[in-house]
Length: 260
Image 1 (cartoon, rainbow, N blue to C red):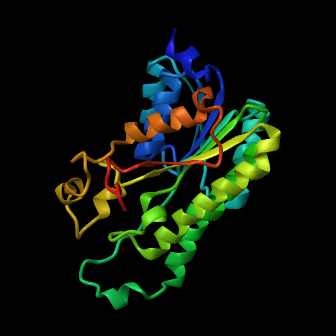
Image 2: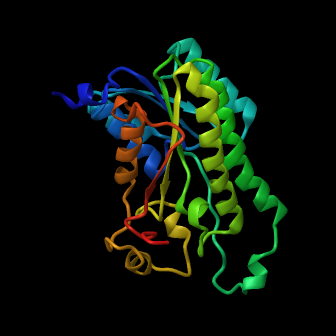
């Protein structure tokens, strides 16, 4: 049995927000090459190298420059998808932002709310996810799937990231369960993955008060997830392999939170 048959996503339209990042680009290559999907890349940054890599591997790819925090821009991107491809079979909500505390801050300093930072987190990690689901679901047939990216910070809190980030990622868990109930009668499944720190990403490179080795030592497996590890979980959740799953969140932290 071919992998493309195994996951039943060949020629399906897979929309990926945050496609230029580590997890987004890993998803794009995996879905295009291993599942045979037509991937639609939504990102603010140029995706030229990624597009070339997908096309060299005989994959189908479309790029639409998109700022997910801008509702009108996001709406226009989905209208372009409707006019050119006609539907969305899978939505991967990967786009997200994170900010980290300065290691010199005291515990009380960390409790203060920065209004501008709070708005950034809520716009990208919250409203953009809801808006993408709203626009995509209008053109999703029964059997479609949505996969959101939360974080272990949303499930267990975080030492490194600002509390705004934990709050926004916890909100994605609620969105996932709510939309699963709302869209389930339409045959649309909604699930999430909650990764721990992901090695090799721009986000992780911002951390100042913990080294990669420190983070690995907290995990039972002694490793950090790679972008491709998260992409594989998302492929499982997006495909018919998980046809009886909706409203679920799959943790991926290399064993950091066993017993917590």
